[in-house]
Length: 338
Image (tube, rainbow, N blue to C red):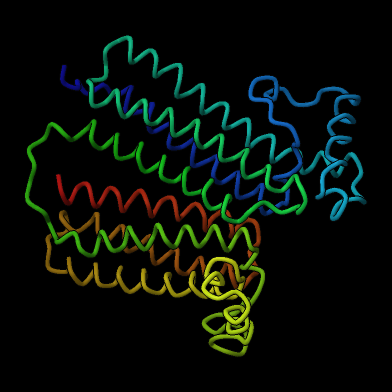
């Protein structure tokens, strides 16, 4: 059976992208407000219901008091202050559960209504598995901050973020395939070299952005284009003396430097993309101009986020634009090849 385009399926998958993106953004708020370790237990079903009575709140607070974060950082917290950080982590987990329901129930409906061919069924199963794996990574990340050090592993944070973004990209590619695969394949508009180079660099850049977040590297060297008074601070060299090449993944200064350099490379590649399509008719080059325009916005936003030492609004907006860049790049790559 071939896919018969059903707009409800397209809307369902788009809703999934929106919800996962929202979860990523709330996750960013959770991180920036230091709320991620406030919920100690993982209760997939009953955890949907927050504490409702004063006694239930007190029980949650007592569990939190046993964590390293409370003992080392927040021992001054009152119950009211605890509730303020509990809120964002609860919302983050609640959205995850909503995503599960939004994907599972309509997915079963469309499956039974035979809206999917064999190829589409495999993709839907992969989306479900990806969602479950993402939930596991979320708990695995939180667990790293509940044992000794009240900070989650920046590697687990990066894995959690990258898994969510790969899931978004996979769903979007599935939508494009579902809508356009039956159309006649056309010749490429431009060479894929620049587009593929961009997507690889953007993926690496997002990974390093997660490392910057996990190491709180955005809170140091809040200057641009220099890092303080130097192009490369003394701490950068010292980190390599102490850690070797591991500094590229574990040093605040080194990780921030790599994030800056990749951002500059992406900027110049986007300029090259504009130059490459300059002679094309507007209708053919619009998709590429959108890619470059969003990248320009992201570069400016990245500088502002750094200079102002990662305020919550700019940090979350910076993360939002990263998702948009991925989607417009995937759209450009797909439409350039199909």
